[in-house]
Length: 470
Image: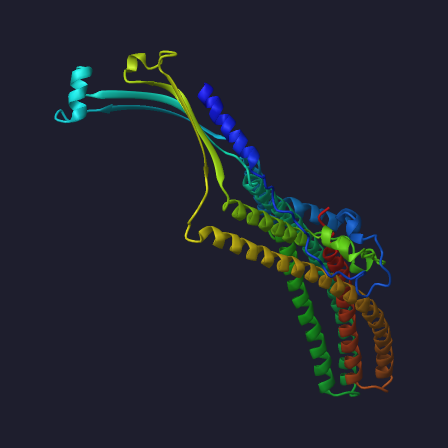
């Protein structure tokens, strides 16, 4: 026991004489962020992204679809499984600082040659031609974390876990935005179908008037053909819109984790409401809020710890091994205590000398990878700022477009009334009526599209600012 105590004392002193190195200090890369986002008047600390998605989207039908998507979307479920897997690895990493302990039981019978020295010695001293050996022992192995290698290994596991967590949040923001985009696209298609159906009634009326005028000799058969073609074009458009509605319903159903089916909606696109005066907040706050940017920073933190591990591998390692148990050359007195007890302790410092430059290469490669991840982090920040700026300029431009498109629709609707009155009075030909109806139809379809694009730009801005995962 005294010798064992001396061994432990020796290595404790050796451990204390070495300067312990913890994980490498992390310095966040310098980011060139603007004071405020482009196309915003002032820098405001408040941000619409802080709203939970249930507060941002107030349509009950859309809320129901998003709830289903968060619960059933398979991409999200896969991400959650990845989080669970990383969590198990993180739990295991917490035990890296503890020693490895094992238990082994063995039995061995050896029969040396009778003409060998061992064989003759056995006959002389034991009166038998074989030797038995029975062993039952606990084995312990422990490496002191002098240079912070184990701490860095634990840190790598923690960063990997947090990456999967942030990745899940990033996927949720994408799923929430995709469901909202699909829902608003469905409302746009509904609106366009209503517009086309109403226009079909106008085409039927024009065709009826043209046929009567042709029968009375006031127009030619060409007018009837042109009016018929106008009606057929509208019917074709209705069929296409119905097809697009069915496909969009299928896509939404799959997105929320269900079989393709009808999607219920109780409102029209004109009844939808999203926050109009959107506060973007500060770019620096967006960087810390966006899950994908945060995930990229965690990759950088992981690479920093990997550099620490590679550096620690170049320094001496202090390892202590011990084993003890019972041993006997006869099975009948194998477990006689204390006669069969044995034990040993071994400790040592090992310093790698020549590893064919492998350790230095690993360290240099780890440092280069860290530099690459710094660049990737900066690129993710730049992309995030760019997405916010794109959404802002789109939203502002679409406000103007929606106003102009609304005015155009009003003008062209009045033009239809004027053309029909002039046509009935013989002061306009059928081409002017058909042209007025076609122009009005396209203008109304375009207005519905612009409104949908504006809703989409607001959703894009909400996602780009980091909203949707709360």
